Every structure is written in structure tokens, then in C-alpha cells.
Image (cartoon, rainbow, N blue to C red; front, side, top):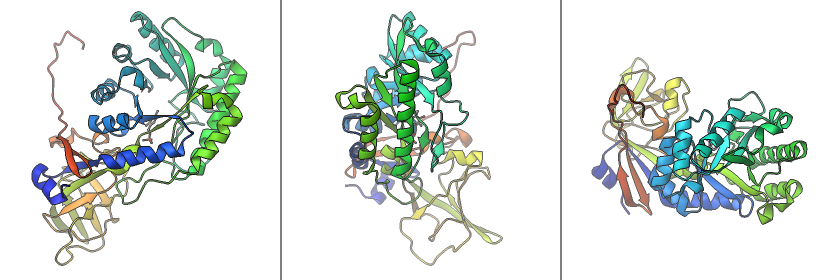
Length: 412
Ligand SMILES: *Cc1c(COP(=O)(O)O)cnc(C)c1O
């Protein structure tokens, strides 16, 4: 077990610390909340670190990927191509070919053109792929979280369009439609919201089956599982989900217990959010007018880069050892070291006392941390990433952006 001061001596700050025991605990908790035997996909978008993704693979998860970079991370984590589901709008022929070449045989298709391109590309490689049609459900329930369907969306096909033109989803050279994919909700803390959404998707799938004759062999019901972000807190308890989901399946797809259809769910943030902390050092404490600015050695280049788009999320930077007289009181603004006023981590929400040279910890940033941030902006090195198991260092690395020369006449 390595203590925080020791880790900081070895690797410096800023650094991300990821604890794999917590990843395992999250997988166990989520599996317990899902229907018995359901497949669980880990969305590498949340954190593509290959050692984390590898831990999820060993815990029995599959990989949900949507780029060649995530494909490479999944393969580096030990996933085989056929354990990957390739999703996302706007897939290019090149990336589809790369995925098929790596053995990926499962794709979520987001439009008729996407279905045609995926199958044609597979066919040109003498392969056959299974496609899930991503459906933008016809109606959706209210509730918390970030909603992505039930209204106009760049994701998936409107259920009405699928129902009106089932011929467009007939088998083609290179592949066929084997199921449906829903992902309509994100970051919903209460089980009832998630259950209502999943049940609405189940009803939608049953309706589509009746309208089109498409009997799904695979039913990916999405997710929406929440996790605290950059603030203290713990994973929501979803224990009450399983009976709700199982009875919905029994009603609409009674063969599911025998794997007809195979039922799948997806999660990013729930599985890795709580495993990670960002440790930073207070580089300076400054006063301007009535405000105190705490300048960290880490900012939107390492965390919450969406803040650079004006989406400031409240964050808590918790001092590790508050010693001496309080340097600050209310009106504390926590900023990073970048030369832009957008490098703002927290305004007014900060509590505690901050002194130059002290460590602070931003909790629960294992998902949507480093790779969701502006790592190229202002040219500072990426935060180090340290993976721990039971407090012992397993892996330490740093991501690097690097410029590669291209032949001006050549496309890679
Ligand atoms: C982003 C994404 C996920 C993961 O979302 P979380 O909120 O992190 O669980 C799952 N599936 C798809 C299709 C996604 O785009």
C-alpha cells in the first residue's frame, strides 16, 4: 500500500490515481442490478486507459467503442474483436475496414446509409457482420439525466422510420440486422428513471417486432447509470432495478432467460467514475478585489475540458492536509494554470483552506477525466496516470500528443 505523499514523490503532480478494486466493485454492483446473465458493455469513451479496460475485461465486461483509437485501446486491453461493439454516427469506410480487419463483427448502425456502408465494407473484406439498428424511441418517459431520444436526435433512426421501411434493413451482402440498440439516457441517479426508460425501450422493441417482423436476437437496452463527478459521493444503489427489468423482459421477450434475445446494457461512468482521483498541487493563492484565486497545477487541460465550452461543473478540490491559518474564506475560485479565463474549475463552491505547495484531491474523476479534456491546449504535459490495485502501483504512464509528418500526396 503506497500512501499519497509517496506516490506524489515518485510521480509528481498533477496525477490521476485509478484504483482497480473499485472498478471490480462497480462491475459486481451493476451486474447484481441487471437481469440475470445480461451482457455488460464498458464504453471506452469514459476512460480508454488500457489497464482499466483490461480490468473490466477480466471482470467479464465487453467493449463498446466508437473510433479507431478506442479500438486500439480495446485490443491493447486484451479484448478480441468479437468482444467489441462498434457504435457511433458518421463511421468512415476506413474505420469500418480497420474494425472488421481487427475482427470486430458487431456494429450499431445509425442510419440506412451507415448500414449500407458497414455491410458493403465488410463484404469487400469477405466478412459478414451483425448489425444492431440504433433506435431513437418513439416516445420517452420524463425524468432526470441527459436525454438523447424521444426528440430529434443525431443518434439512431426514428422508430417510425424503421417501422415504415423495414425493407431498408433487410439482409445485405456483408451483413444483416440482428437486433436493436437503444441508448437514450445518461447519468440518471434513481433506479425508477432507468427502469422506466428501459421498459419504454422494451415496449418499443416489441412494437417494432409486431410492425416489421424483425425479431431481435440481441436487445441492447443502453444504460443511463450515474456516478458522482468531481465531487465527493458514491455510486447510486440500483439493487431494485433487477426485478423491474426482469419482469419487463418476461412480459415482452419471454425467451430472454434462454438467450433469445440476448440482453445487453452499456455503461461508462458508473464502472470507472468512482475509481479515479486527480491529485494536484496548489501553485499559488492570490487575492484580487474581493476574491481569492487558488491556482492549481492542473486545469481544463486535464479535467472537465467541457468547461472550456462554458459548461462549468461544480467541482470540489479537497485539501489533503489543511494546516496553518486559513488562507482563504468564502469567495474562493479554483483555477488551473492555463492562460485563459476559461480555465476555471470551481467558482464559489470551494470549501476549505488552501496554501501554496499543498496537495488537493478532486474525487470521482475516473470517467470523463483526462481524455475528455483539452489535453492539447497550452501545451502542458498530460497529467500522469497511475493505476493501483489494493493501493499498490500496477502501472504508471503519461499520454503524449505527437505530431507525425505526412507525405502531402498521401492519405493514411
Ligand atoms: C457515451 C455512451 C455510453 C456511456 O455513457 P455513460 O453515461 O458514461 O454510461 C454508452 N453507450 C453509448 C452508445 C454512448 O454513446
